Image (cartoon, rainbow over all chains, first blue to last red; front, side, top):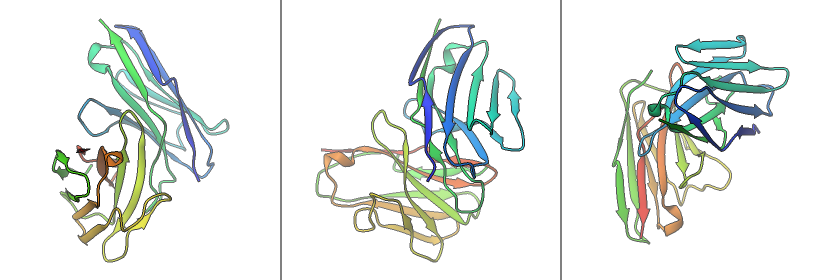
Length: 113
Length: 111
């Protein structure tokens, strides 16, 4: 089955700096890679996703890059703000009916004002 | 994306008792997924629930401990049975509809 590894487990940055979180996956059949933000006491919220036919996707301050050959993908947050502080999870899935997500271990991001 | 209503949002339960968690979706979906998130950990899939058939459980999870119902295409329940303190976790339901959406979770504490 799929195995997703995520690094780092914790990340502390100064407000305004960039943050990068990296994930690797094992199953070459995976073709859908979402990123979730989880704030304390809440369920994971999808912030951005990418499919395998695209190498990069950007949404305002958030971007995701995918290298299918190397089986890794990354989340980039620019101009970080204190409200970006949360736990971020990457995940991978073959996006066919009935295929569930396999999650990375999570990254606790702390943005210091 | 789908809107999911999950309840209860939290509960404190005595060991040996059972708790049923409900998940309501605002649209019909084929598959519903139940996850467990232990304190400070990532999400682990418990089972996949199809309407009209038995749920499919992942390794390490069994129907006697986590019975699931899926009576229609917008609703599912997960029961945590004969609870022990080790069952203290956040339980989340999820559906796939233009991406995977999660409910807000049920924070369970077993004392």
